[in-house]
Length: 130
Image 1 (cartoon, rainbow, N blue to C red):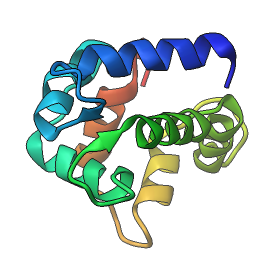
Image 2 (cartoon, one colour):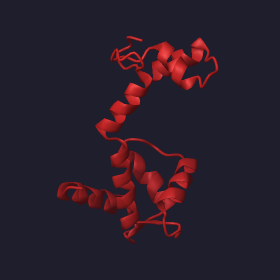
Image 3 (cartoon, one colour):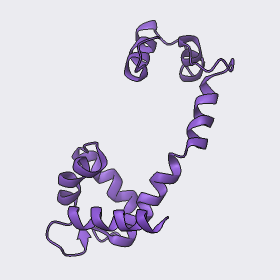
């Protein structure tokens, strides 16, 4: 991580840590996650996150656990990994993922309904070109 990334993480941690005790509770995570990461979490998501991030099983996320989790998330979303995932769907190398390619990959050998595929496309097709 760069120095500025570390400083930014420290600022976020301190802002989420409302009571200033140096650790994040589940309630603090729920309150601050949307504000700083642009997505909200429900209680079941917080439970899952705590199971994987709270290494010492203290019931809180300390700063070192927070940094490790942030670094892991950043590594998971690199452009290279996103491109690999895209290419897995783009079987014909057209630069687009068609509904047939979605069916092939997500169908797992079974037939997906046209409605299910269309729902997937609607969720991710920002420019509406199908």
